[in-house]
Image (cartoon, rainbow, N blue to C red):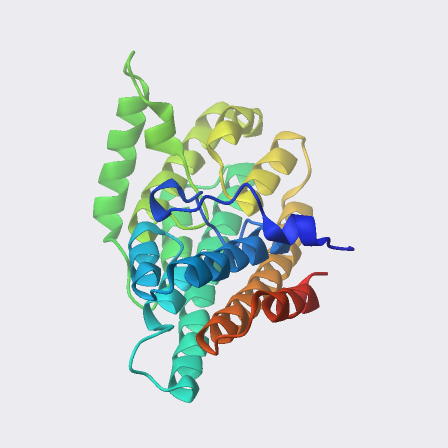
Length: 264
């Protein structure tokens, strides 16, 4: 894909942290992420004050970007900062991998009408220590399902899942998904689609609702999860290099060249 300067300049990127758009490295395109870092460079050149990067870090909920912003102009030397950046990558990517594995387990369970408890046990096995006790997860999942039956139920709050949903909440919500799937059949997946904000989960539920068999859907989700993780690592690498370039006080044009090297 050819990328233009106009795209990377990202005129739509806000000039203050308070108006910063939601960031999500896993979901956003390379161009949008590159534009974000270039906008920070432009602001830094205007303000001539690196403290605003810490202010920006306080307003972003994207964990890897926040880590880079917090360490960019810290007392850490560059070698150590890069090493810590790579370590943070590994931790965050492993978190995504576990969430994806749980989503695959839940979708397969829906297709096969598996016992929700059995599905929960399978999901918990992806963690070195259970993020939530099994009994507590089951109790909260039932409470969630009762809440859905209320006339004023906020389904978005109760059912929405994205790629950064905390592990304990993910267990509860996915268990509720499996319970609903067992009760309503795979066609009931269609009612869950508006709340599946994670692309992998949305794809799996869509295929389940369309009648594809469990082995095919599971294999597709496994391949897709690897692709998403590989792409996310590259976007993290791009962010790390752009942050290093800002720290090294490269000019805007040089940052543009760094960003362009990572755009597929």
